[in-house]
Amino acid sequence: MQSGIFHSTYEKDMALRHTPAQKIRLALVIVVIFALPFWADNYYLTLANQILITIIGAIGLNILTGFTGQISLGQGGFMAVGAYTAGLIATRLGMPLWLSIPIASLVTAAVGGIFGIPSLRLKGLYLAIATLAAQEIIVWLVTHWDAVTGGVDALNVRNYLWFQGARMRFTEFQFYWIALALCVGTVFATVNLFRTRVGRAFVAIRDQDIAAEVMGIDLFRYKVLAFATSSFFVGMSGALIAHWRQIVTWERFTVDISILYLAMIIIGGLGSVSGAIYGAIFMTLLPAFLNSVGRSLGGVFPLMDNLIPFIQKAVFGLVIILFLVFEPEGIAKMWRNVKDYFRLWPFSY
Amino acid sequence: MDKFLQLTLSGLTNGAVYALAALGFVLIYKSSDVINFAQGEFLLVGAYVAYFMIGQLGLVWPLGVFLTLVVAVALGVVVERLVLRPLIGEPIISVIMVTIGLASLLKALVNGIWGTNPKVFPAFIPKHEIHIINAVVTTDKLWAIVLSVGFLLLFSLFFRYSSQGIAMRAVADDQQAALSMGISVKRIFALSWSIAAITAAVAGLIVANTLEVSSNISGIGLRVFPVVILGGLDSIPGALIGAAVIGLLEAYSGGYVGDGSLSQVIPFIVLVLILMVRPYGLFGQEIIERV
Image (cartoon, rainbow over all chains, first blue to last red; front, side, top):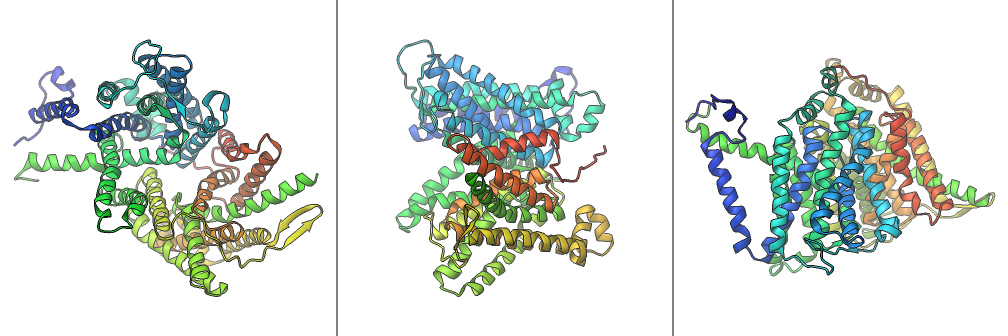
């Protein structure tokens, strides 16, 4: 049993993992991640890819909402910017995937920064509604700027990793590694971001923005920076969706998506990278799970098939309500409780 | 000129529906600092329950409307008791999210029970055409205007003169001070949610009566945000003026600019611009923050 974690060197103090238990857990996760694509079938690989892409988007939103405290309902719009930019420059300019994804991320970061400008004067509810406006304006532009985006028609994305003329199809297996690399990169970048001045400034703004300003943090600069950083990862997630689905349609980026991502980070845990990961996994697996349960029940209750979408929506709403009422700090907190229980057992006080 | 008049009329009538939905919004925000993202779904529930009472059960319309309002009040009280009360004192994002979850749940329940196909509502508010100069308007739409102005007057008087209304304002101002003056904050919350549910049900009824009963009704919930932000989240006259402005903007941009698709996005553009200049809306109360 431990009485606490004590550091005797600066290296140990700076380490991301301190205890043997943490290191063993990390090693287990790494083994699972690398072993998964070799035994999983196509269905599970698809789910895994979806989870990886979703994690990037959820971490992006958590940087803005969880760490900086700026509630954003514009997630879907920013993802649309990333997806359409990636899709368009891949298709029209023939750029390869390794170029189109970073460019799309940067473009989204710029757009996010622009929509972050009102955040200087707006707070809380008013900011949430302003980002909702960003969402509606972006989706409207996407559907009505026919010359560039093709309007409401779907955009077929041409894919290739390096410069090649023809269209290439990634298998789920190949795409897994691309998504995994970007996802791991995102996790590392974000975990370390909050060990720097910029990251700590974000957290200070969340906790008390006036006090942060008094302590010498340029609110405007850091708020816009938070929007841009967040949108960078959200755009990356959108760009990955474009390349993964190989088709971009505006229906994937409506306000429902913004809400879904907000639900993810709340259920996972606001203001923690692991929370975003748990939330993304939970919210991706929940509808898939309900779907398979519904299908297997379909044999018993013939009406079940028609009701599945409604049940998914109802459960989605119910899960949000139940989490907020009973465990507002989300899965991350539940997991901490479990760990604490075993760490302190049998003396829980 | 005829077109202008026609657009003005239709803008005002659309604005009236927004105003009704917005009133419930403002009412809840004024008394409990909660923004209700499920307002559109309250409209939806109101419309479908009315359809069930009048269309499916075949009740006479005064009884049907009365029962709908009873259901609305019950819904408001239950929601406040089970969902919002545990969240008193939680951060804004939790409150926003819980009403979003509620919205998803209510919409799924309505769609699961009645399906997603639009239903024809047994319209009981007559739809005679009335000619004003050269523009045509149907009476049911005029009723929307009458009702929203009526509710506005009612609420203004209620907040000014009735003891419950004054108690609600006290709770909005400072919950602790209100508690120490012997006001039951819980009762005030329940009251404001049930009144908001009533206005939403009336708005839902009107929409159902003028158009049809379909799940698109909940979309009005989203359209109402620009309205309340424009007027200021805690101002009742602001809600009415905001609704008129947004309704007119939608009508004019739909009628005069290009193919009319601009009307979907113009409220949101105006919203951003206004927020840049006046962060608390036109009539909203500015909050002075201290560390």
